Image (tube, rainbow, N blue to C red; front, side, top):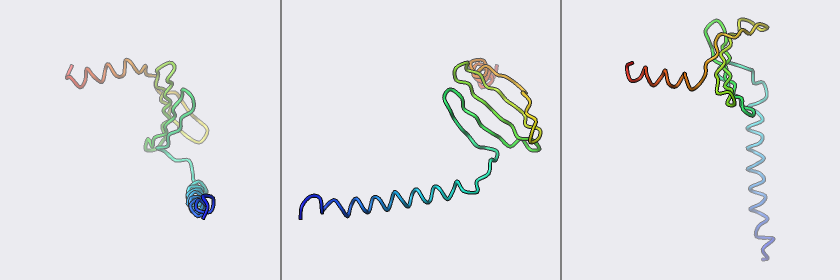
Length: 101
């Protein structure tokens, strides 16, 4: 048996495994809905949605400006900025609170 015929079953087996993984992952995407507690990242921005009870909360982390923006999504069409937090100050305040200051 030459090297090519020995590798052929292994290649076919790996192709079937990869195909099964692709099918199982694509099944998750079909019919998925946007819901709270989802995270997405692109470039310098990370976006997180959180269930706020009656409203959804949208949190955006801007890595370039080191700021955290918190928006309140009242309905399907209204999004309002609730607060803008500089991350260095947020962490400094958290450290001080943890120390009991």
